[in-house]
Amino acid sequence: MSEEKITLRKNPSRKECEKVIKKILMTEVLERGTNEHFKTAADFMSYFQSLYPASDSLTKQVQRAVKALEMPKDERGYFIINKTEAQLNQDKEIAFLLGKTNASLQPFEEYETLFLKADGTYKDYLYQLLSESETFADKIITMINSSNGIILFTTNKHQLEILINSLINR
Image (tube, rainbow, N blue to C red; front, side, top):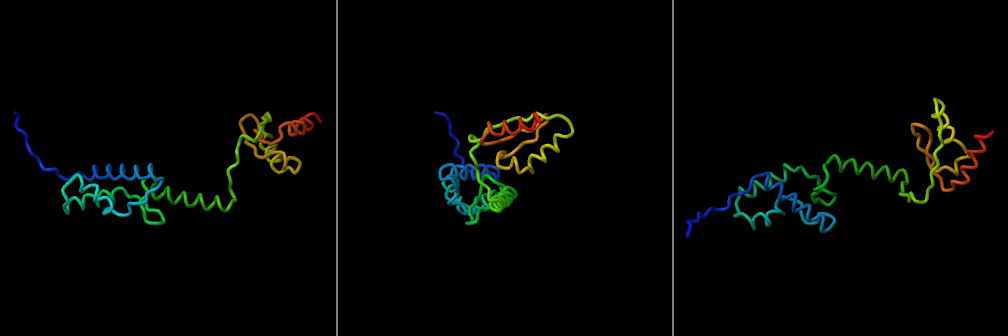
């Protein structure tokens, strides 16, 4: 029989704590869609104490790990694992502007496309005139100025084709 050495479990490093905390929070988000349990370092302690002996140094290590992760909190005070503070602020600004612009997602499958081939230096001016035109206002949903012409999106491709061809063949 070989001699076995009995060792006490020592506290994890701050990096190890960070990895475990990230894993706990990612699991929480994947299972519940959001973090609804973790607001402070103390909320992680039951997990760490199930693996390591409870001590002040373990508590301090977990606190350091939480601080090092620099996780922002949501409006209810829960940690947000998958975003930085800058991303959170940017998301708030995007949400504000989406509201201000009455934005809504539109299914793209409803739209048909036409490519209006146009060469030369007047293409940008043509794009501007089409975008300001009352004749085309209800026929063109949106346009993209491309390198060799203009991509047109419409709900009635046939009608737009007839109109553009009538102007081309004048």
